[in-house]
Image (cartoon, rainbow, N blue to C red; front, side, top):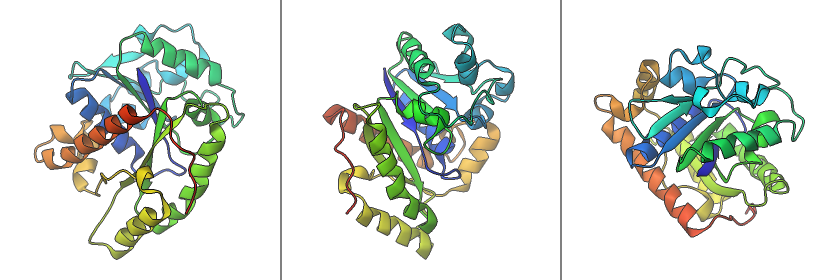
Length: 264
């Protein structure tokens, strides 16, 4: 099983939309996929399972690692797609910024998941590089960084990447798969300029060729608790996640180790 954390410096960058739809893309391709909601806000669970607040989930396991995986995993209508909600204990020490406070239990969770014959485990994390998110990054095989195409977000990205490099001390095998532009609006000058600035800031191999455009269909999909491709007229938006999935698999096939980020 390959574990991939979806991480960001700040909220509101389309992290949950990316997590849900990318997991659905992997599952549609026939890969046994587990999507873990590790954001205390429970955004993934609320998108896909309305009763998620009543389910035992990831944070319940952190509070009590004796909980069996069978109690945590929620199947979906797609046989290859399963979900672990944030859980009823999603406020469990979530704000603890101490590095390593949950490291052993996060790694135990991922090990337990790997025994279930999943191919891919995507983890939607809380924004920032502290607390539980820090320990997830220190345990995962790889990370993807969604970045909203807007000026303020672009300015914070180098600091995020430098912080990720420091985390390689606790996770030397961490593979930074790259940055994915989200909420791109090509007809908005500021958005297009931010995207261009990001392409100049990052080495070419650090930026996914696939971008996720801002589209109201994502809001409708989230309101209905469905991946975007399930909706009528959602196939075009779904294509972007299929393209991103192909890029990810190509990167994973080439190397499990990414060179340390050096800003231009």
